[in-house]
Amino acid sequence: MSVAKVLAVANQKGGVGKTTTVACLGAAYAELGERVLLVDLDPQACLTFSLGLESRDLESTAYQVLLGKAEPGAAVRGLAEGPDLLPAGIELTGCEAVLAPMSDREHRLGSALEALTADYDQILIDCPPALGLLTLNGLVAADSLLVPVQAELLAFRGVDQLLDTVEYEVQNGLNPRLTVLGVLPTQYDPRTRHAKQVIAAISDTYGLAVLEPAIPRSVRFAEAPSAGRTVLATARRSRGAEAYRELARRLLAG
Image (cartoon, rainbow, N blue to C red; front, top):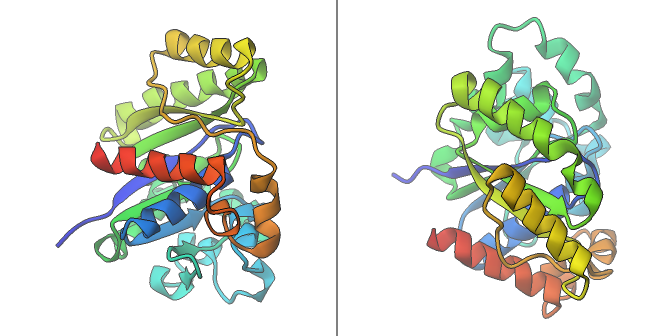
């Protein structure tokens, strides 16, 4: 019986492509025949909305699952592109306050996903742009971490604190098995020297692998959510779609 590989996608800086990466990488895995579950842990529910679901119409979401009010399987929804989704809703905004007094507060997601790992090959977690309990739940549940980084100077903001959290709170205690796959350059323009310098500097400063291929800047990514699909469906032959397909192939190859 296979057990899913669990990947958290996190960066406390917003707007760096976390949600796009989870959605597109998940769709690319599904194209390759992998059984995929996407988990939306962001109270803004951008992943849920961008994949065609309206959280207010859902009976149960990640909120109910984290608090033990719904079985994980009952909250999961199928998507047209192949992956399944554990959706989020606005009620996640108050979830951390409810979780805080619980003795197992950082392990709630991991415990819930144990019931699903045999049903999937890949589980991808979209963490919110913050280092609170929701992101900690994602990191504790995961086997590995991918950090999307926009190829600009401000990309440095957030990476340092995220890596400190990973090392001191997660790897040294809550989840020793967590490994950092590396940074994924997003919104990347290879024509600019600045973009190349930023990514090289992040790699040198933090000793992180730079995952390839870099994800190019493209308006196609912004257009796809209006159709409730990913760019792999709405612009199949675009550079962005092909980049995520190649990333999926490389990650599967190890």
